[in-house]
Length: 162
Image (cartoon, rainbow, N blue to C red; front, side, top):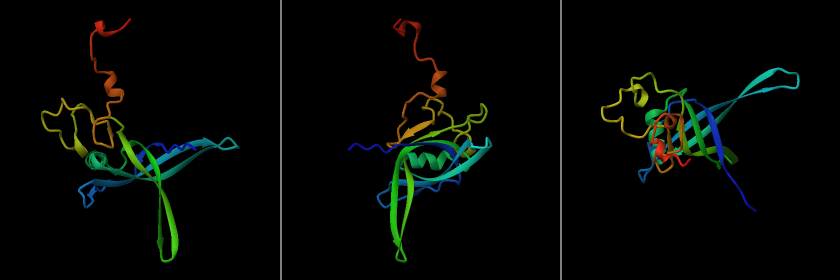
């Protein structure tokens, strides 16, 4: 039987990430994500419900989250569900969390000032780097299209096949 384990979440970060490194030097950070849902009840009233999800990020993605993400930041996470189980004081516990494999920073970059990590001014010479929008688990730029990509012309009319 085939199986598929994929989660895509869009929400706001509930706390500043705390970046740490495990013994082999791999970066890891845990973040909380608040995901809001708005729906109508049978009586016609609108009800808002917030689900809090724990997300674990690894490698370069964790380092980028530690540098650019703060409490309240809008964020999109793509990953997989993982069930953690443990026993404490003879009682079995379990917790479902998301292992984030891709992260996309959302929201605007403040003004035209080119703010960098956590509100610090960006050093000169960084304008030619790819936008810090989407990073995959390997830490590279995913290259998938985003709103920023649409505004950058990449060829001439001669490149259009029709």
